[in-house]
Length: 130
Image (cartoon, rainbow, N blue to C red):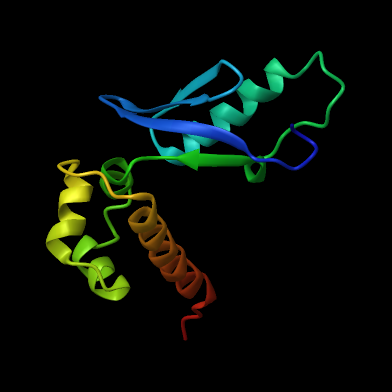
């Protein structure tokens, strides 16, 4: 569903030259040197794919990007895993193992991590510098 407001699930993977992604249910692929470029290319590719259908063009907000923790922390190096672990009440060593790909977090742990990251994002977006 597109204009019914269900997000388009996108799987993102790190490559040697940047990032690649595919729309899970659509067979649409794209690449980019970084995440913003990848998203831009992906929106363009999906809209080309949908060109013959009678639907409104998709926007970035219609996408849901799925990355694994290791890729997330490789790209968003500004976010410190130790700080995040302390903030969400998780053992820093355990989060480090998730980040390195040594262990996979359970769905409950994944949700805890996502909520912590989103909370930091909300705080940062509300900041004003003087």
